[in-house]
Length: 407
Ligand code: PMP
Image (spheres, rainbow, N blue to C red):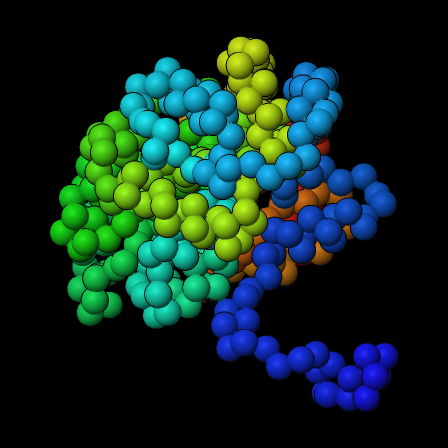
């Protein structure tokens, strides 16, 4: 048999490792490629990333050209020291004290989540997740064989006081609790102070790690910030914080960071070395120069006033076109709002094709659960469309619902 011989096996591929059965696709990513193939006008409420007009592209281009020049070698696995310094300054300005031996630069927030699971989650370990939660985080935990326990979310975030009963019913304590404390993806809600405190207590009681995933925390446009878990309990080794520049700057840079107990850094470095050796040096230098130039806050000020206006436009449009037939969350920041139909028979997955034909895209609720929940709900990204387009998109959604059978 030569290397050119075609495989005759039924599936046409070599035998897979058992764990490959745990690799599940992302509905968000597949809907992105579906949308890319559409040629008609679509109001895009589906994607959760800043559009080109919401990124400081001119500045990034300038810094990127400089960052790439002559920098083609490997960097340190824990990240470029100058970037770590800038991150420490960024956190210190927000009263989060940290130290260089707590920070590891990652290839986006996703690598931070992967590292968290690699360090803490064994096959069949119980991991508490919010329901609904970020699809790709579920996929990461599942890829390590986690047994996901979905806990409810209300307007104050994860319903932490319900966890003891859920855990008692599960008959074993969780190894990890995955939480998105601010402007949660997909619901837009924020974990209250009382629940943050209770979460810290329960994690202690159960000897569990808290995977604190906060990509949207700096995107607050209303009301006062709630202290982070780290501010509430500085140095608590159970808090494993995952951060990223994807939402506050640009997702294609793929630069994020982990802030975790110093005892974990050698393990994180080992894991990075076995994974990607280091995060792209030019990408890290681009972010470093942008931060050192003092551009982050002016950039945030610009986009936050747009996001605020767009959130209001989305809520107003839902009220105008749907009235009481839809209940929407009221986010204080971030990108998303979660809309639930009053009629539980509405199926947002089934509706999707009609909505797309009418020229509006969203992510159906079941994408955010591994239990096939939330058929009557959908995630709407308000951040990337102008108020006029938001109104047009919500009108198209109403028309799709009417065509599909009304509510
Ligand atoms: N966590 C959450 C809650 C997210 O919404 C996202 C991005 N959609 C990520 C992590 C991943 O971030 P990154 O693109 O930096 O990998």
